[in-house]
Length: 198
Image (cartoon, rainbow, N blue to C red; front, side, top):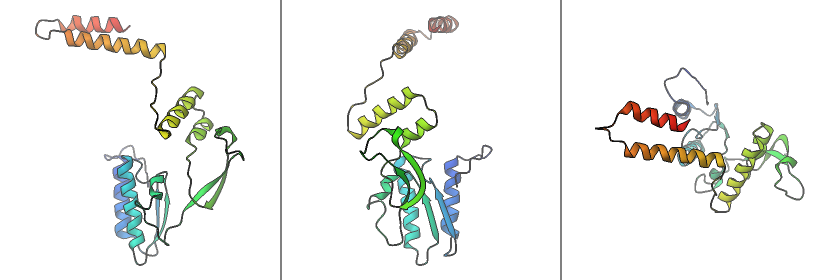
């Protein structure tokens, strides 16, 4: 799953759909079916529906194949998406968190051990830090994440560079709106527009 063929004339998501479709049609009780992040290449709601439907298809089989699913779509934990079944078991990778339940991502230790249960957090900010994402990006991401989780308004960044760029865009739009396409000289218009941006 998830082959990244650059020469293919289909999107990665369409290739994934073809592979899963073939899996659903040809799997037997002796098959091992692997679904790795299936549904992540489209809208979240569509991905949840497609992955949930795929899992439900296998659960409904009298003699299903072995199926291993890896996903970050935690919405599938809701019984309305994936009804409880003795055929379905959840596992996660264990993480050592500080005893005080601190949210400081620097205190996390990934243990790389598969254990029963499911992850409630993705630790995406910690992974971003480990990957070398600049600190200001991680701080902004943490702010946005906190605001979204607490149903708060996300405040816009107010850097001088952004304000200056916004003003350039506004000026360009005003010039475009005031340009007379019947009487105006398009060459002079673009020269003026490009000179004002530099």
